[in-house]
Image (cartoon, rainbow, N blue to C red; front, side):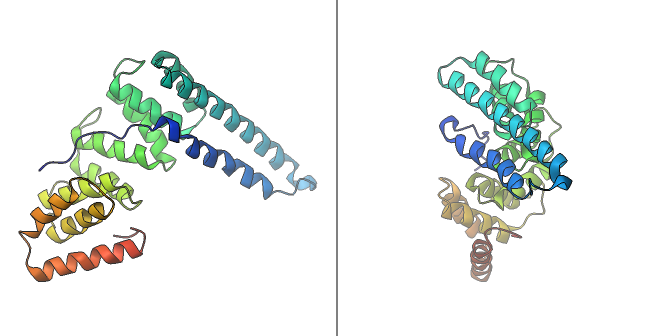
Length: 233
């Protein structure tokens, strides 16, 4: 069994949820300001400008979504470029996927990871996962299992089953981390609980090399990890 070597692709129709959330960050910040206070006038202006930029980027992103769904990838890439250049995380992520696959642009792994990183730096979990995958595969970067494991761990702690599975596999093989079958079992168990299709097989494979007390320890670690919402696992 090997790590499933695929990137996460954008679910175009579902991305509006991320857009709504990012747009409301500006709105929430604006509500904290007292518009009636002269001391806050400059801050209010800055927030207004930021909101205007966010709305423009969101509009460009939606335009890109429409073009993408219509199969006009070149137009989609242009719109995503415009939105991505203004800091729109989902546009940056989607543009990274398009460069990775060569949809509407020339295939370019270095461009792909550049855009993934920008989105990842804004906390977008699918982008963080794809950065990890590119380090694992050596696509656009020097292959680095340790760096891949670091990115996978970041996303695994956000509950993404694919990252949990990959991290479990790396602990099982000792890739980028010290081989640790207890943690391999733990992450496989967590991925299985999150419905990863290969996680149960991995967990059973690891279990064959563990003594019953170690399996019990791994199960307890998985339980505690779930109770902490995967933080600090």
